[in-house]
View 1 (spheres, rainbow, N blue to C red):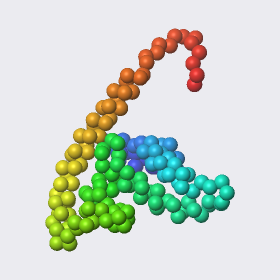
View 2: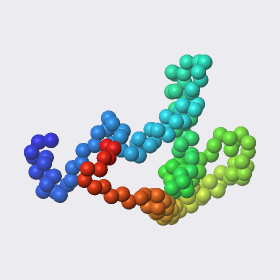
View 3: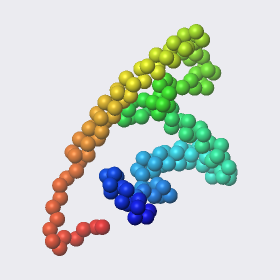
View 4: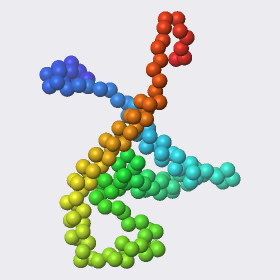
Length: 159
């Protein structure tokens, strides 16, 4: 963080923002994701009779997998779909013989995968439109429930 670095940033029109990686409160998305993981773990490992220290490590992959497979309300797609372009085959699909497992054809799989990859950009565009609609709905809901307040000098306020 010497003066040479600051000079270079000013010459290159680079804005510097500080963020602390050690404190998740600096990043709202990370804080929300950590909260969802902890919420999922608490439900799975809490047992007042038994000790549950090591059980956390066993349940963590299942909780993370569940979060990756859950459809987002904002986008309408799961994070797994957004990364790979198709939904994952679940163990329950294999165990109970879902239609897509029964109709699976090895010869068509490559062609279907190429089609999925080609349509990925179209899905991303759909997701961006859906996300914009969702944010607009949130904005409208927030604006309807926010009431304007005026404060005068000597008013008592809670900080």
